[in-house]
Image (cartoon, rainbow, N blue to C red; front, top):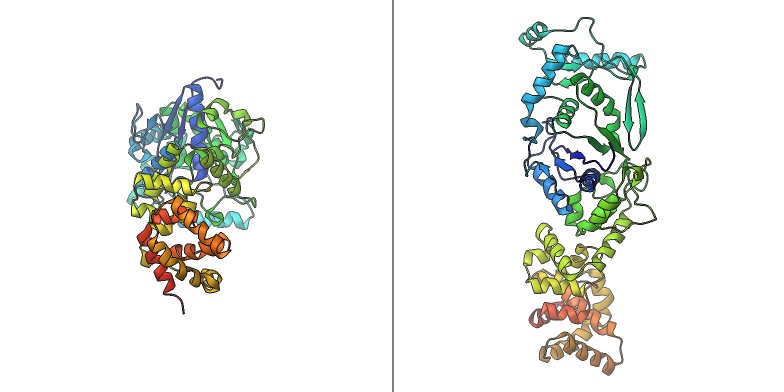
Length: 487
């Protein structure tokens, strides 16, 4: 099958929370191949491990994918010819395939308790051997299973692995062969009646016509089991492509200890989805020619399996921030306004809570131009949207600015500002510039005391823009409140 043939690919996360950036990369690469080949991108939920499931997690995953612009063609939320797309709702299908394996002699019942299994593992460890489940000389049948249930023993089903080496023909990692001696009879149905991931995964891929499985390298060691199941069930083996691991900058597996690792966290932090998507695309894949900046459509046109590397990718947060800064700087006003509105709606932003007018939101984007993420706007301008009496004056700012001439400057400015009209950027700039000239001082000596008075700190947008957006009455109230700090 050539890469130009229409591909049916899938992204099959477990509903354990928000979408991890590693999962987002898997979804992206599958999406790109589906779009490139005129194929189908499927989203299904693998929720048979009930102990790990988190209520509502599938909605979070869908929201994250849609925010990134990765809309699926078939699956949860949109339907399709292979419904349902939750594995927990497909148990009859799995049980029929398990029955088929039992009847054909490819699977058998087992009744070991957790304590017995732990004792076997301990014995193997004492012998310094890897644990391998000991297949009984006579495979238990349905009568044995019935008796075990009556005795209150756990009844599980194990797959009887073939006595032969299995080679995975992987389109990224190359051929990977696992010796028969390294495989043992693994569980395909647990004592609670739920099928394990391996069985459900293989059955669903076959039922849904998936002809290329692309997933993280951590699943490569499990693929020989899947191939063995496919052969026993008479299924075709799809093409496989296992993606390199994503590590932090110290070469450790990416985890929360190094910062946010979920797509939602970057959304809340004020990143543009197109910047994050562009960055994620380069985690293990290269379009060639030292090219880095791409739109989603350009990714679709350029993507190819043969440009996915085998070495681990590194998640460079500084590079991501640079990507976002560039994307924000080059985006048009309408796109920025749309993305900023999304940020304000889902983050804990004082600006969002104040619900300013669309015109004010666009003005904030203008006066904060050069920002790296939308959170920078909060940090630089959020003080304008909290109650005047909620401003907390930074001790360092008071000592450095107000106590070193700033209080005197504010006292002299207050009556001038009270009588000043019009309260416009041009009018305020002319006023403050004139004060600097008349007192032979730099703008910092005038602007910084005002900035500390209205914001509580030493950072804000340009002082004229700040005062206009804050408004005359609130500016004056805050200056009076700052003067009250004078000892």
